[in-house]
Picture 1 (cartoon, rainbow, N blue to C red):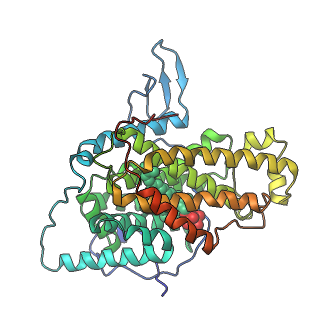
Picture 2 (picture 1 turned 30 degrees about the horizontal axis):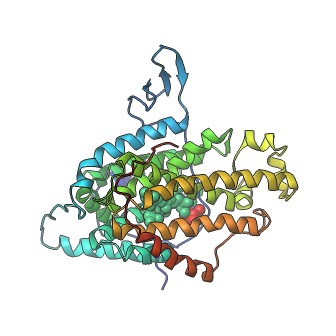
Picture 3 (picture 1 turned 60 degrees about the horizontal axis):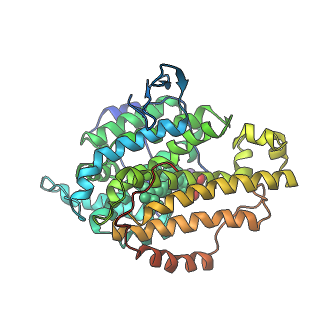
Length: 412
Ligand SMILES: CC(C)=CCC/C(C)=C/CC/C(C)=C/CC/C(C)=C/[C@@H]1[C@@H](COP(=O)(O)OP(=O)(O)O)[C@]1(C)CC/C=C(\C)CC/C=C(\C)CCC=C(C)C
Ligand SMILES: [Mn+2]
């Protein structure tokens, strides 16, 4: 069965007139592509105090040290502030009980059927695009898995804007309209049935709009930027397009009531998993991206290794390239290690899909090594038997109970 992802329509008239609710869903062709996105507007960052006690101004991202010196914040510091904000928002709800208190639906006749149809459609899209992950979600509670499917579909549609069949027509204005539509979703005014599922999800779970806005910001970044000067710039991009997914997912997956880990540390691990996945995605797709004129690898690190864009466009696997790649892979693995510390703290039924996705994505790094670092013309992928072996391992790991007396270090 091939399930088409409903085509995202962000024409101004359709967005402003919220009447076409279910009728407006149109089938589009499913087209895969590599995706990454970026930007430099720190819309996500409310002015506040960082872990170093600094106060920063949102727009300029300039911080004043306690001694009154002005300094620029790193992307990691800026993103960490979002982590703190997200953790503070959900702390109480997540710890109150293992089962989240799901608000009752307003029983408008006919609406419940439509909603259930909307979730069915999200489940089909998720099953079609991310089979293994979908199977994992089946172990979650029905409320949680429906919510994860709805979020998955919104992320996938957002990604398709810059990576899908209509990507060449996407403008910053179209992304602005997609963001307006997101606001409508959070205000209970969904535009189509997939949006309706997300609207229902965000009214039932303590999900904040900020990571969603930030993902759109990542798409803006992808439209206007095709090089990264250093890892700091790349980190911000990875946060926007993938770290945000981690932050969106924690309020749904829930923290185990037995866990003594801080909410911040769990959010930090979720962020790390998103960053690790995106770095891996970038390392896997170097050749494919170069053919689209894109180089996501940090320019300063390439130069230090004696490499340049030209080497990438030429696709030469040299010793310099191998040494460079080893360092990049090492960095991605550190983010996976950081993420692992948090998975055990999630609610029991949510751990398995997260472990499965972590182990499988991490294995892509092993495959790049096995390909002797030729990520120009060979796509690293995890074979079915290897995937299959990972699943019981993930399941066994998911049975490990949360640490009852450990406080994870938020940034290590
Ligand atoms: C269990 C689990 C993985 C839950 C997440 C479900 C979810 C909402 C996924 C959305 C993914 C998505 C469509 C994101 C849009 C942007 C994008 C495409 C990012 C890339 C994903 C990989 O996609 P693919 O290989 O198809 O890439 P191409 O489009 O072909 O280029 C990313 C690499 C990022 C994905 C990031 C995550 C899945 C973050 C996972 C983190 C958590 C679920 C938090 C877990 C909690 C703790 C405490 C560790
Ligand atoms: Mn994509």
